[in-house]
Amino acid sequence: MAWLRTHTRQWYILAVLLGVIALAFFHGTAHDVLFSVAVFAFLGACIRDVGLLVRDNDVARGMIGRGADSGGFASAAFQLAGKLDAADPRWTLRRSSSPR
Image (cartoon, rainbow, N blue to C red; front, side, top):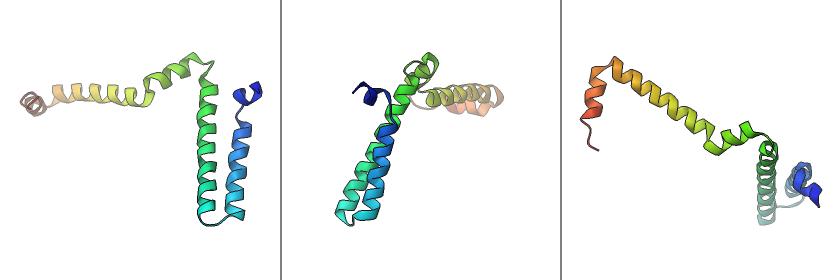
């Protein structure tokens, strides 16, 4: 049972088998339901795989925990706004006169 908690290969195989069975043997509502189950099984396996990958990696865990993509974009936008304030006096006026 511990093997199911520490590996994801079997969940990917299950998702692929469900998808193939849904596409080959079922039609209509049964096809849609079984294919949806296959997609959710695949997404669950992907999420579990990421969890297992970052479990023992402190750097990756920190990046996922703080939202590396949004934090990087926000800091870059903040730095760009500072450069715009210094470069264009109209931007400073417009920004300071806006209602809060």
